[in-house]
Length: 211
Image (cartoon, rainbow, N blue to C red; front, side, top):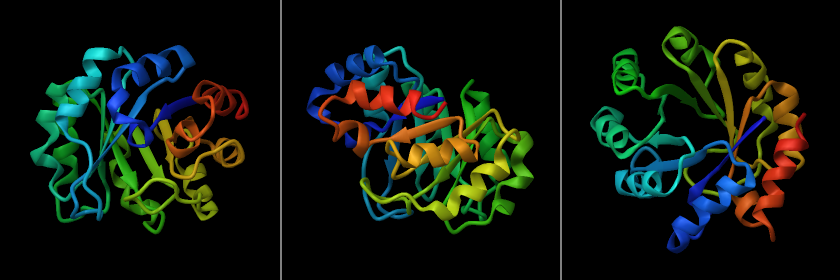
């Protein structure tokens, strides 16, 4: 099981120290939530944060674009140092295949993210074009929400169909077991890890509690 701590829940004033801690704690990736204030209500991180992280960590940077026009941002995030870039399958008015190809053109892994209420049929036509699928187990837009067990069949649906089945939202020591049993290969967790008295222990719990 891989664990990708969400930097959104960290103390941004201690970015370097946090990145070093995550490496030492055994994190596999660092997850970066990008919100534009349109696709989701909040406004968060941009390419500068990714570039700053790239300078202080060797961990893969897992960038989740919750934006209305992802095609405008692919190059800037790739140049900043993103290793994986997700766009949302709900953007059906976009040429998703072309955008995924654009992500691959920079040497990044390409993924589709899917919201809790969205059918898996929105992703299925693109399985040959993606490396990862990111299953949202909360409604995207803010940290600290409760895990939605209704998404578990989605996780199982994608098991074995893509290289990484990533689950994001409400992941803790209990819900991680549900996600793992359903077929998740990577867990994104923010509030649980950074709200824990010892984030290193929290990462260890997620990695070892899901075998």
